[in-house]
Image 1: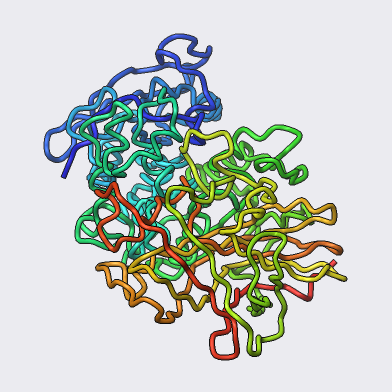
Image 2: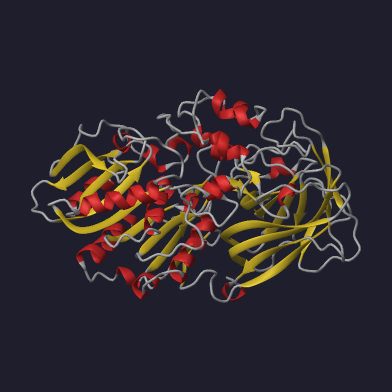
Length: 590
């Protein structure tokens, strides 16, 4: 196991919330009314000490409740974390801002997703022993800072009273998507390699094209990272099982508000985690006080939303909520026992894109959802936007299959989507896909114009019947909303690496020409396909550099430099009815 000790991480310019704030030395520009104790070294159970900055109301008397934020990005680089520290201190709370093990000014060695459970637990134990503490600790933060909260929650420290985990899904692994670095067995290249690269890395697309994939991060100038372990292990390997991910067996006892976004990489996992926290809660209080809010933004971007509000290039309306007010009311309710009505809000609040409205529910999926099949059709020529592919609710009869030629040397380029930390200007969000759909290696299936609008809200799935002349290859699927003027915005996307069709722990190669059924987890969304819009499905075999290229050889991929062209087939017939399953709420059609 390699140890990641490089300080220069990619910050907010790639989508992480950390870069939304100025880099300051932590002592400079301290607002009036705040007292700071800098670099207090907090001992862990093994003797390693973690650097922690403590902030207090200067003129208030102890004891204080504490809000803890744990970060690998350097606590002084993030100060004051978008104004959250002054806001919390002015509200009467102490704030403990801690560098995680092996990062910035903390001692020890750092490995991604290792030791955060124990370290978080020990940090809470230390905080409640301080003479200024009232023995109540809550937690806050997005992305990695959200991840540290949920692994701590799984430890059930009795003094961990409340949490607000933002975009925490990378610490949640049900088997096969550790650190959200895989999707259907395909490696999330740009997101994972991008995170490990030094922050000032240029020519990222050129680096992402580097073969072997194993060498990409090292060629960026980083050394001693965990990237090589991530790219070279199978998605559900013992290596990942040994790390500190929240698992399906974990139980919880803490009220929490989860916040995530439709164009973030792990929104479906966040929604699953919300359900698990309710189902596996050890107390009625915890079970009854789980909440989730899903915005239409990209990774952690709700904290810095600006008008006009866009997800990528798509206008998603004015969706701003007063998050700061919500944070304070949440903490005051649980830490100060304030009766402020915060727990009266709906359990699920989600933004319906297209209608550009907030909606609410007490459950996820939303009550009344029907899961409806939309079938792929063509006369055998669905290649490109100019092809004859169509999408209907009628099951296919006898139809010829579609074939695409996938050349790893000329992969379909990524444009937007659900990702973080890629270092690319169009790495996440919604963008017009028509240029991509003009390619012959993209199969395009489009519905008729909708006479009435259709709300699609919930988990999505694609079921394809496929074959190939290669021993291994990938299939990708993209859900697209086609506007009346032809603009085609991506809504959600997924990948599937064929070698993992029988499980994510080991590879099983294909037999040429044999037909296989595959099921792609298309994650989740909420989108209103309005009247005169059309629903479109793209099928291809690459989406690069979001996912690493399958070199089609049947070899390891990660250590290879040679590739072969694959001729991949998608069948749609009575025997092989390829389709997508969309979660439809018809009773709420506008």
